[in-house]
Length: 281
Image 1 (cartoon, rainbow, N blue to C red):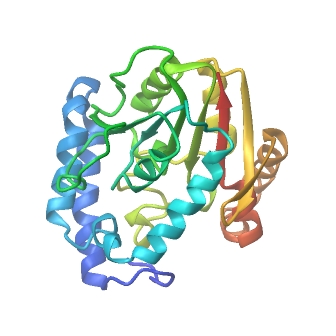
Image 2: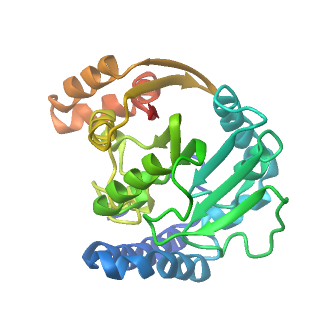
Image 3: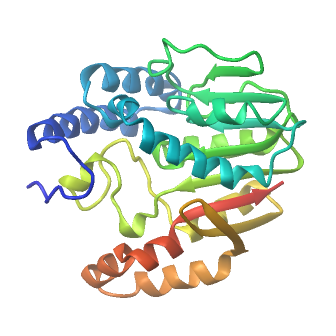
């Protein structure tokens, strides 16, 4: 049964249902595939989704220049404190590459790592920019070659096994003291993919949604020496210890399911527990 639409979603019920059915079918292929099969599947399923769903937000969003520019400006503000003219920047899951292209004006070199070139097939890039296709976890760059790595709404799209493999590769390509900034939706107020209109848990291309506690533990497992949370709103962010955020998540998860979901969706809490982590090598 479909839930209420609301929010900024402008598509019809039929379009949402079409998107949901196609994405869920393709996501099921990824969930059931072996690691070797997923190496080739990520690119093909995303290409198929974008070809099959011309009203997909990542395609139609190109028409909303104002909103797109505000989002990029907010991300650039977040990243600027970590970047300099000699920096090498790597974005994972860059989508239409607008952020990476904006950052290319500020740094020496930019690498955009993605599983599909479908969205950017008609784009042209500056000389200090490289688009590199990946199998979902590999990163074809030398060790110790990247100063700042960044992903926005990517981690949740990876199979958990591939997320771990990708994190190991991010850690490998970062220079000593380099940082990985990861922004991903919190599962406590999810699901956040197309299945939010139909299901209680993510069944689309969000193969796993995380809490701050889960992701911070994963970063430390990989070997990152420091993990901080970014507390912010409208592009302005303050680095804080992860412990207070994790404590709030712990309390929310111990409430009844209905109360916990409502509390996690309440704007002040949603901002506080939004997963924005900075991990330093």
